[in-house]
Image 1 (cartoon, rainbow, N blue to C red):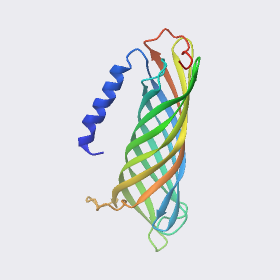
Image 2 (cartoon, rainbow, N blue to C red):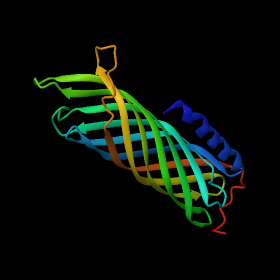
Image 3 (cartoon, rainbow, N blue to C red):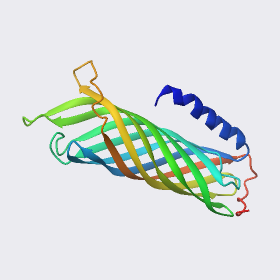
Image 4 (cartoon, one colour):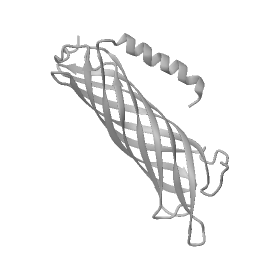
Amino acid sequence: MPARFLGPLTAAVVALWVGSAGAAGFGVYGGGAAGDVWDFWGQDVTTRHSEFGLVLDTTVARSSVFGYRLQVGYDHLTATADAGIWDLESDANLKGVVWDNTFGFRLFQAPSVRLWLGPQVRFARYWGHAEYDDGAGGKQRTKVRLSTFGVGPAVGVNWNLRGGPTVALTGGWRVTFYNGSERPEDSESWGGSDYEDFAEGLWFVQLSLLYRFGDDGSPLPANP
């Protein structure tokens, strides 16, 4: 992600945090996703994601139309092609750091339950290896690094329990755009933007466990 965006986005997060004092939650999350890469050099590529990390939610213990959720975590991405450039049975295995920004707007609220809908925006950085069919019955192993931007709709429900914990379930669909480079494993120089013209569509689900602070541990009020 371009460095010029880090300052404004960080300032926005801090402003939301301050404005939500007494209504926030902090905890952990885990999730998974499955999808396909669109038109990757004429091949069908299936993708799988497994992720976990930390989550901050500004609106888990108060009645509010808008809420912001920040997730920072680790993602393991695998990709398998049908045939051709990638060997049929080989995977690309990538590790990544992800930063999710979810902007939720209340659909329904009752005591202890909040249902919301809104966009989720993801920034991520991946690195790892891929194996290719070298055309002579063997495989070529390369190193890969990618930067990504993703966006899509998400819907979620929060269950706010007495005593402080909140359980949150989120699901949605996202399109992710990739840009990056690769190089042979025995080379020290990276190539150009070899991965600049493909995108991934996927369905995802995330489960969070947060601890609320700044409230009395009682259920949320219903819609005002």
